[in-house]
Length: 262
Image (cartoon, rainbow, N blue to C red; front, side, top):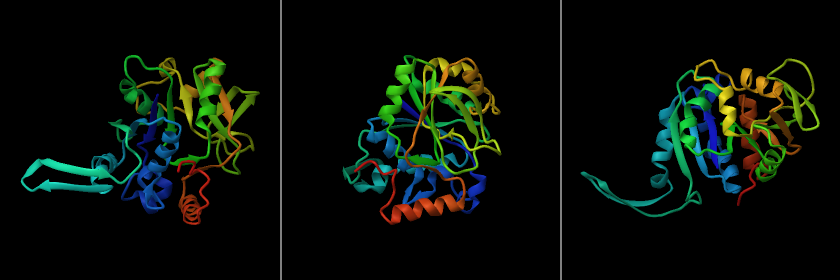
């Protein structure tokens, strides 16, 4: 099963970091938050990734192109660029498959998914999507089982943090309406960690302004094709400098709830 991670936004509310790097490359405990997200998925044997790139895409490409060299020993002969030989990796990410797909500098989330869709393959099945700036201790096996059981096209993970985001109106597990980033209300919000069937792609458009959280998910909800899995555990996005400080502090104190891997 493939995992799309949306890595293309500019992260304007985290300019302290994102002036020089894309938000998914902002480090927590010396590792990009993108790495933390990928480790969560890999913990559940979901390690076939499609990274939807945009802003400062070159930095994410360079990170993975140099991953083996930066995490292990190697020998090379100068003047012979093909002579490099690695001497065993000092990391536990062996087996990860990472496709780096440039989806445009200014594309919105729905457009990025649509543009990266060819990398799902001709026989695409259920696939995952998440944002490149949020971590959680969500049990992805349970979310997938829930998605398969209800038989609709889309599942969204809902969370209830004391925050400033939009809401979903739900009836049991059925999403009745979807409204992103409302300024009022205390209900469930979009926590990301989506599971989609390939037919959901028909709701998306290859246009820069196609925003997943607006038209596509709103129409999907109206068509009774969207369900919510409520995650009652830890969830935190890295939207502001204060968010980053909290995540870094938790990691440094050995109290990072999202670290479900060993």
